[in-house]
Image 1 (tube, rainbow, N blue to C red):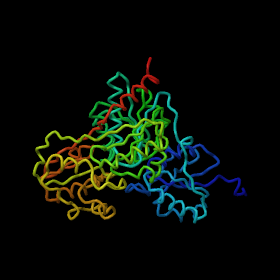
Image 2: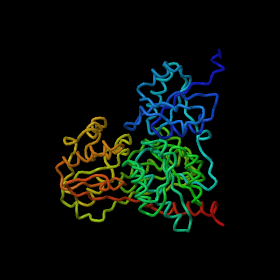
Image 3: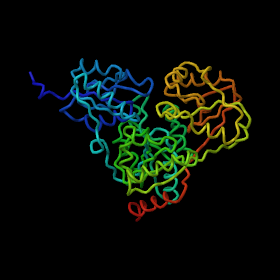
Image 4: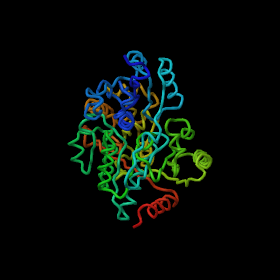
Length: 447
């Protein structure tokens, strides 16, 4: 019989269907000295009780790897004689991360987090990453701005999104989207559409998936530059040559209070203080001071989100119900988003509180996140949730639905009231961003 020192180290990876799979692929898939006995799942609805398939798990895992609810963690550690637990998801307060570490330690296992050296892929083309200190800061709007700037100068850009593999993991190994038909064929969720559709609207191609070694290979074939569009406040999966990190002027103090957002902040090549046009000036000044202390040698960009509508007169004096970006409003902790800004800017008559009319999983989401009142989170991780969202909006006594998600909800839901779209784009307050991008172009891309 082998001694405990000779047997493979038994590992659990705590995740949320994203970084957990990436960390496994990078560190454990081919490591004969370790055995990942399970993933645990949190934060995203209905991603537990699945299995990481053998086709992705590799030859050491002919039966794949089970995915359990995080609530079973302590029992898993005991039942599976787990030696090490790795924390592999994002946007939690530091104290919450350590609460989870305490559960692990109390059960007898060690607790760890993989760092950039173990989890970043090297690209054969230059990489720009756009990350943040919290969910919902405006990363994708900045990412699209950068993609447009580079394309205007004749450069080919592949945008790569942080993973959102909530469906068939085999089919989602590596994905390339260049049309709305491709989204329909892949049966992507509303959450995925929120991130992909704005790129398609500008004629760009976006990549995503589960196995980011393959995803990167695909993206490199079509690109002079790879743009990493991060999710939540996670670290980039590719080693960046230029790392933008966004701070939220509506959430001062969060930049050093959340994992791994603070690590992003401390790694930033460029700090972007966003939403300066709608936040109190003292909060903007606080973040500028934080940037000068934490990253004194990094340039600072100030920006805002320009909210606009094709037909703003549609909401003037109307009773509206607002639908906002799901992750931003839920685990991102924001009570309002672009929809509320648009409602005020364009003179909506009344914002109807949808909570009394919420149905199914949407009612459960409101109960779980009691800070929500004026916006309905666009929870669309499954067809059932999409139908619950549709029924909630149908029941809510409003003249129209103000869709402030980056996706076009009218493509997925049918209502007895109009759906009016809000759009928002990043706009710099100054000229630092163009200088930084031109320096990058001269250094990495000049013939």
